Image (cartoon, rainbow, N blue to C red; front, side, top):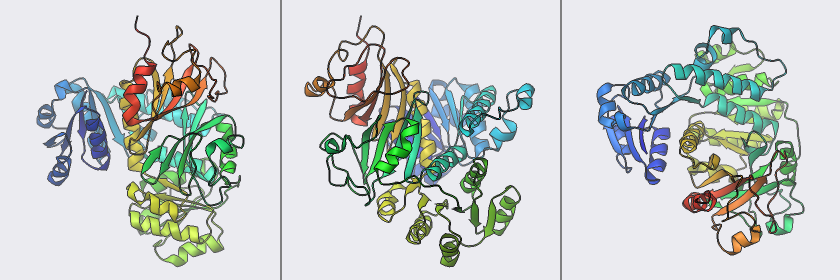
Length: 490
């Protein structure tokens, strides 16, 4: 495929590197010469120019582009670039948005939609989904096929982590019938040093541990795998079992009452706003006087304090004296954010969440006791990568989730009603023994018919026609798995 990426910042270069490694033809556009020099280190074509100018777009080959992705730091530039790209060619356009003002105020479908009241019984997740649908519909009228923001997505992730201490991430699959959760293994895990096969009767059902991140390496586990302290574990289960899994890993169900947010930038502001919506009254520390005043005037219940969070007395006062049991440090300066997070954990905060865009800091953070890391830039990049994947999915692949630095993907295959001779009717143990399923892949769950409960694959499990099969697959083995699950040739 031919893809044009506007913006050679962290998101743009991350996408360009991964997509180029997969064999796609990538062109990067950026107006900054230094950014272009960095992008030239990748196996991509680089155009130094304005992503919304006709000359730069034509030089980049807009007429032949399949995808056009604009991820600069300016939302207006991203919108304008996509609109111009649509006029000059016919690519699928994706705009990264950092300011949800566009979705909240300007991106409405019709006057009738503006008057429509949300159902008071709707959950926060359903309301957010409705908002996203409104935003996408309006964006398409402007020539933008998909608008992807970071603030609301990251705010909801932080909300899930705070509601369930010990949770690092939470993503739904297959119409919310399954959930992929992530948590860190701490020294209070009772199963340390035991093989997963020995723990199978203690692991809550239904569910499967389908991937482990150990420092910078991803592992597909089997019965002989042992969990180590500071491993990040990815588990496929159902939503009402999340708390049981956390208890299995030594995180008892505990209510969080007092929340401290350090940094009221765009991410901090949207996080506090979302927490207000789900019933929390957070306290916010912001060093900039004008920003603190601006934020304070926009909250109903959240308390904004103007302080420099590096003054350790204010953190000690909030955690020890005021009893803040959850702390989210959302500063852009990563080293400063990590130091404050580690100090908050040292003081006894139950749940500490830290913003870190450069994941080279992850091993240090987890070893220092930080519970969860959140990266707005990485979240946006992975969402875009997943959308690109969905367009290029094979006919029987329904969905995909990217983990880590594109080391592993979670794939959702649909077995056709007529079956698949390569995998149907064969016990799971034989699929492994005959090496039809590569070592870099693991079947995590089966969904049969309309059953709401996923079935955990065991050695005797057989895949039937019409089943949905959820796998974790190392990126290098995806092509092999796609061939295995491809419909039988007629």
